Length: 205
Image (tube, rainbow, N blue to C red):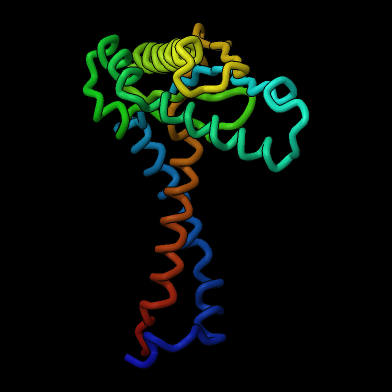
């Protein structure tokens, strides 16, 4: 068993290079398997809606330091994130889609890394039209709830402006591309082929 744990020798590397046809065929077979898997069990569709978030730093903190503005952005961003995942917003999306709230939070909805400017609201579903409807519903529910909280002075800064800029005709695409399936299958089988060449000792005469 010592040969199993020892580093590859020069002979092992030479044997690997000589077997290039084998691992090239393995890489091609892996790519074909990845393509087959993509068509047999395709990933769900993903739709993306966009809400523009403007924190209006110049109006909210006209004479404050950069450090205070940073804490302001961090605090208000956290509040908006909480609104995006709040029960009130989730119930609106759940009522419109028939999905369970826990399923929406866990498996269906994704929020891009929040910052100033465009916030992206993603929804995954096997049906592209349903994915589009879920993303649009979430973005609109978030915008309306945040605006209602600001109007009621319920914690959000009054200078924040939100605008659902993309909720119709949304971009919809597979959550994982076909190219990723091809590459993963090819790399996986290439690795397995190379390991087989290295670890299966040829018979000696």
